[in-house]
Amino acid sequence: MSSHDTPVDNPKGVGFFGLIGLVVSSCIGSGVFALTGQLANVASPGAALIAWAVCGAGFLFLALSIANVGSKRPELDGICAYAEEGFGVFHGFISGWGYWLSAWLGNVGFGTMVAQVLGSEYCLGGILPGVFSDPATGNPAVGGVIIVSLVLWGITLLVINGVESAAFLNAVVMVVKIAAILVFIGFSIMCFNAGVFTADFWGTLERNAVIMAANEYELGDVVNQVIQCVLILMWAFIGIEGASVMSNRARRRSEVGTATVLGLFVLLALYIGASIIPYGVMDYADLVAAPKPATITVLEYMAPGWGGAFISWAIIVSVCGSWLSFTMLPAETSSMMSEHHLLPASWNKMNVKGAPQMALIIVGVLTELFIIIATFAADAYTFAISMCTVTIVITWAYAAAYQVKLSHENGEGLQMAFGILALLFQVVGVLMTGWGFLLLACLGYIPGFFFYKQARGEIGEKLNGRDWAFIMVISLLGIISIPMTFMGIIPVF
Image (tube, rainbow, N blue to C red; front, side):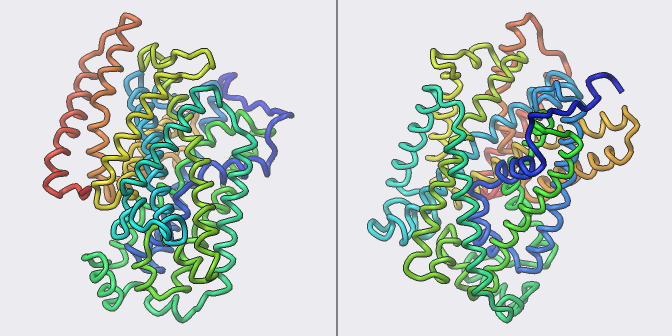
């Protein structure tokens, strides 16, 4: 073991319970508020519970892998650097660009969620129905696009003007998030009806008939239901890669793994409570038919007169807080990639306020473009979060693969097993549930290759034959996705 492999404690660092809080706060975004309706549309309560168990185990292995690599190689610049260190410069670009794509695509998901909430009858939609979101699809309408665009560019301008840290704002948003979730779960427990919950626990023909009437497809068997849940649940765990930072912040690095495990159990308790208990609150037909996000309808059902409005504004505050963080994240990622000569130096050029202005404007323009494109999707929110998830899975998979390599080199069999299981979960999960969106993500790499080539040229390096082979394969897969999308093979429109 080399000197940098030896963990060094930080007496002034984050304590054990603070580490647990970091895991929880990094992951909770808009996903928890959408889970209620999303899972009901694809799975029975029994199948949804199995999906939670599978995803919980998969992300536990990933979190342990990232925590281990972070403690063994603390000098690396976070999760995106693991691919470069383990597999070479080009793979570092693939991992970093995937993380960058995921960060701003997450903002598209936040934007569509804001439009959905504004369009709710318990929010502004009660005054101006149909102005902010389509009642049938939940996609942003013209008014929603305008409001979301104002929020987008308002946040972008804040960050351009040097808002690099908003600890107080993040603390307030975190309290709002947790309080709203706990209120929702608390009312769900009080209103829970075991008879309603178990009436069709595994999804019978009766339930399938309800689904077909609402969504024109059947649930299928339990295995199919679980598969349909996986990509939805993966979105809820975006942020678990924060473990790669925690090892530097921890008071005792030996506590990182335990805190990560407990943090995941806290997340699972919150997520399962918010997504599974409502199966026993409302009749299934009403739950499926509820406008998106269904959390609003369910709380209004349980607390008439104020529940819908309360959760609506809580969601907006929560999402805008996450949006601020996810606006800074892609800029930070592109700056790190520029420092590693994976993107041109101009991507790391700072303005007088110390913010990467060009990188932030690029992210803003792309987010705006995709918010407009998403309005034409069959389900704008699902499209946005699916694209966000498959792109970050690329980064997660590289991190797991580096865990396998590093553990093999250090002779750590158990850690290597964690990495293998994490890698299998990521790869199999995406190939089974989101392969079409993964092809679309390949399309997003094509412009990135031009910037990568420019960056390598700035330091006098040329791409080798292996790099060009990867570029050709990824570009071809991306191009193939275009006709597949218009033919309906990839279900976007």
